[in-house]
Length: 144
Image (tube, rainbow, N blue to C red; front, side):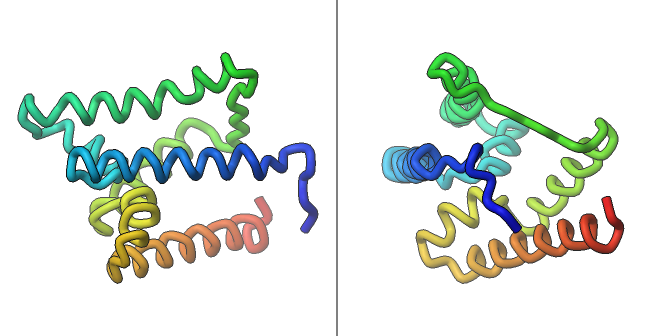
């Protein structure tokens, strides 16, 4: 394994992590809500009008980040080596997984672990193990 120094961005990555932590902290301190993206997005389907504003604002912030990055001279680079069908199936499976796990990597991995939630620690370890296993099988057993 080699380190791709052309795309090694420790300072930007650290800054991004700080911003994620800050956003999660602000949301829980001022709104009493966990910054779990699947819960925020899923909550738009059956929430009261009073609860909809902060959810839309949070998601708008997520969607605007790549646009702001482009203006700051750091356009997002996405290299997805899959077709639309694979992406749709993967998204569907992730959606099912977040429902079974009662949350996603942002809710469990960022907010749950920081609160010392045993369920979130187990959930995050499971997410990571499944990801590692999937990459291993795809690259080394299937040769793709």
